[in-house]
Amino acid sequence: MRSELVLDRAGDLLGSGHAGQAASLLAPVVGAEPENAGAWLLLARAHLALGRPSEALEAARAALGLRPGGIDALYWVSASYTALGRHELAVTAAVAACDEDPGNPRLAERHGRALLAAGRVAEAELVLAAYAEFAHYDAELQVAYGMALFASGRPLSAREAYGKALNLDPGNAVALAELRRLTAAERRITDAGSLVRVCDEFAEALRVPAGGHPRPGPARDVLAHVAAVTFGVSLATLVVLAVLVRLAGAEVPMPLLIAVFAVAGSAACLTAVTRKRQPSSRSFSRTRARS
Image 1 (spheres, rainbow, N blue to C red):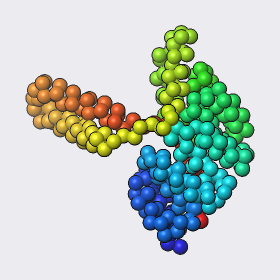
Image 2 (cartoon, rainbow, N blue to C red; image 1 turned 135 degrees about the horizontal axis):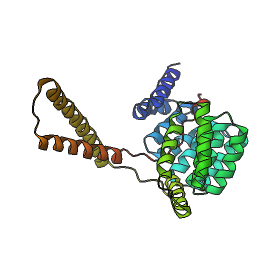
Image 3 (cartoon, rainbow, N blue to C red; image 1 turned 120 degrees about the vertical axis):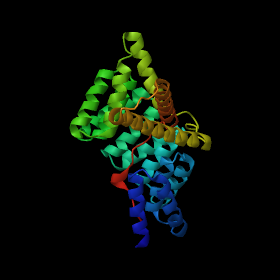
Image 4 (cartoon, rainbow, N blue to C red; image 1 turned 90 degrees about the vertical axis):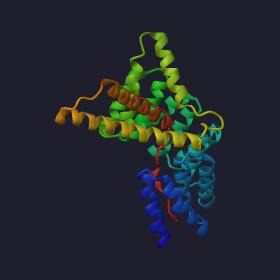
């Protein structure tokens, strides 16, 4: 019973973006209960969220060994292989999951994203087109289909797919983010040549290289923290200066204002660069398994 409570807590932590805390909770559980497939699956999710695909694969394969053919385990095995850039195995696991539960939109999305990460854009578009027509009620699947359309050179059709996703779920964060990304890219499209170039760049951004994306080191994490703190302090300083000018009538030297604005802008840019994240699979929370 206690392990069930731990799994519930770990799931909540993962849902709120605290993967590190979730992993710390789950490690003792899988150590004490190595037969607990649900704990292994949650641990796989946590490791992936933390950028540890090798550890995620180990946890997902442990769950698959306990539940051969389990769709949730196959999902996370596929996602882990994608993050490692081992695309044939990622696609194979995704196809196996779809065969186990045909029509499941989460598995269909994983299949399409595995193909996109492998650079197999034409295949991804065909696969996701069929799934999106069948599971027309699923917003996330429509988003994945839109991404495949954009990558294959059809931005207007991609916009339509994102629109369908937002009609289904107006607050869908992924759909909104991809729509903004598409809108920014469309500003660079002026002719056929630029259309091909922009769409190819998007397709390349979705591709995961062999071996996976390099993990940011500790220095980058420290730099991100320092940049974020500097940005916050700069904003607070600007607010204080504005209050002094507005309410107290104080005269603030122009060089000081320019310096604070410059520091704030630089810190904001550095924060954005150091915290830029690569695309990742969505949580397969609808089929989370427990022992």
